Image (tube, rainbow, N blue to C red; front, side, top):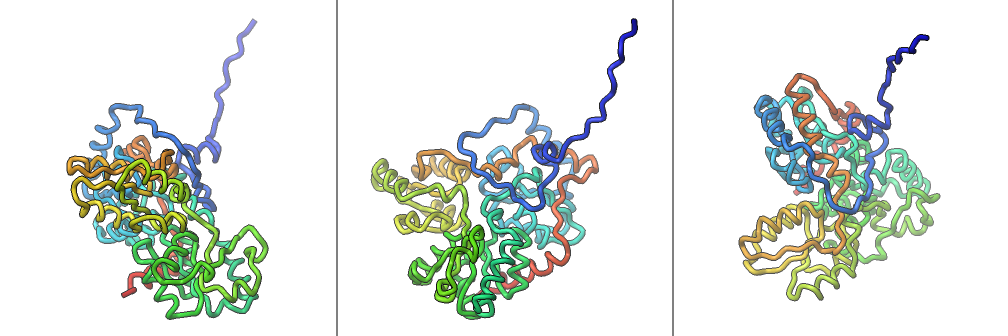
Length: 394
């Protein structure tokens, strides 16, 4: 009687397994999802020491960017922090760094690759860290939309304005069609520029930023805005609606900022007497209209820095940043709370955790390039053109 010997299995990880590990990506998707709840703590107590050792070994070869929405365990290793565009520009200002490790999401790393030198390598610690908003506008959908506008006879007078929170493909589309990119800080200036070039604007992909800027900052009415739904024939709009609109808003939104409601504002005012409500312009229009202050991430930080001691604030933006600001300003007697009672982090942003960062830094330190983000030359050229138009805004 013989005993069968166990056969050695040649097991190869599947594309799905690699995607879940953050070492592969679906190039057609930003993979953004909602995920309420708290975040797990790192399981390995040695991770901090390992990250420090790998970063020290790399020295000036590595430059780590940390978006404001990252968790504290990652932010502590960032050389600079900021919003997506500030970080991309910071990366471009460090040509001596061979590796740019972007602790953010996919579209941000693409922007960094577009703006940095050809010899620099942009790395995203988890390739599945995407953006639900960016995922709501694909290149194919936007091309079809442009065909709809052409058939309606208005394409030649429409100027595309795309939010920074969009894929490189959408930025390239914008550049090809004479448009510009905007951030939440300069959206008003971008729209003013666009209306000086044409009669109508196609705003991609966040309808709320487009609507809030047009109505709140430029004095338009809600009737001047229509919403193009890429999942409906003709965007769900008649030719007359398309021709009569000043703002053609793409049906997209931020899954985090879209959670805030008018009830959230009313509830926090009842719970915290004298509270100042400060929200991001990606929030819905009724929330923005009910808030005391509205502004970008950088605006929110500066407003709290300038706030008097003892003031109370309810902040409508991502929870990691709100917690960090609450802890930072607590010694000054500033009370800072999250606008909504329910907790929701940006789940894809939080895929960049300490284990992924350690794996990335140790791989680079050992000479292994991982998770490189590289935009093809043609896409880069037109996307850069749109970004340069933004940089030239007065």
